[in-house]
Structures are given as structure tokens and as C-alpha cells.
Image (tube, rainbow, N blue to C red; front, side, top):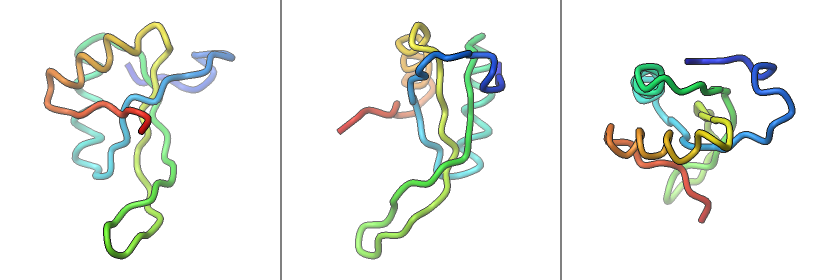
Length: 86
């Protein structure tokens, strides 16, 4: 279920996905809600483009650290590629 930042208190949340399109963000919200996972989604900037790099805005999805594994497994089963640090 989508939550507000104060729901998570002082926890350092885990970034699980960056949705670059609204369609993907809305679908992912449904997937996480149906799975019963609490998540936070916030707009933020990322760099995109191969030849012409530009700064773009996406929907960044976060979960509590204890839910990170379950959330990433849920994303994978639903056809999303979870965020991973390079």
C-alpha cells in the first residue's frame, strides 16, 4: 500500500525501482498493493539517454529494508527489473 514518508519514521528506505514512464509507475503501484507491501513513491531526477544525456524525472519506489527482498521478488515475477546499484 502506498504510504507517506512519516509512516516509515527514521528508517533508511531501500530503492527498488525507478519508473521512467507513468504507465509503468501506475502498474507497479498495483503490483505492490496487490502483494500487500508498503511502499513510498516520490518523483526525483535521473540521467537518461545514450547519445544525448539529459536529466529526466521519474517515480522512485522505496520500501522498508525488511521488505526489500520480498518486493524485488514481486517485481521480478511481474516482469519488472528491480533497481540494483552498479
